[in-house]
Image (cartoon, rainbow, N blue to C red):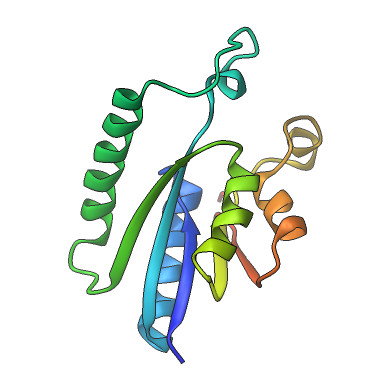
Amino acid sequence: MSQRVLIPMDFKPGSERALEWAVDYVRDRGGALDVLHVVPRLHQLDPFFRAGSLPSQSVAAIRERAAERLAQLLRHKRVRYHLHVVEGDPATCIAEQAGVLHASVIVVGTSGRSSAARLFLGSVAEKIVHQSTVPVVTVPMPAAK
């Protein structure tokens, strides 16, 4: 059965490591990657902003940069993928897009933050695990040596 793997990407080391894992997963099982980049709304970036969405030109520029970076990361990987860029709360958008895209599994990287940092900042990966209706694979960063 062909897999639809949803891979949230913020293009930080944790998500890039998860992308590597997802590429291998899709190659072994067949299917394609749905790469999701979530652009936070202005009030999520800075509490002093009360406006809603970013200007459409900004979102278009973000989409273009994300597409370029993704093409670099997946060069020579021989895997089918589609990039989706949406605006909103990352954990909520990821859970929603899993349903919209009929994802078989979500593969998400972890940032490697300590438990104390997660307590105050929250963990997108943890929220996804709790909100998702499909299996979630978390790919941790390797331990520092």
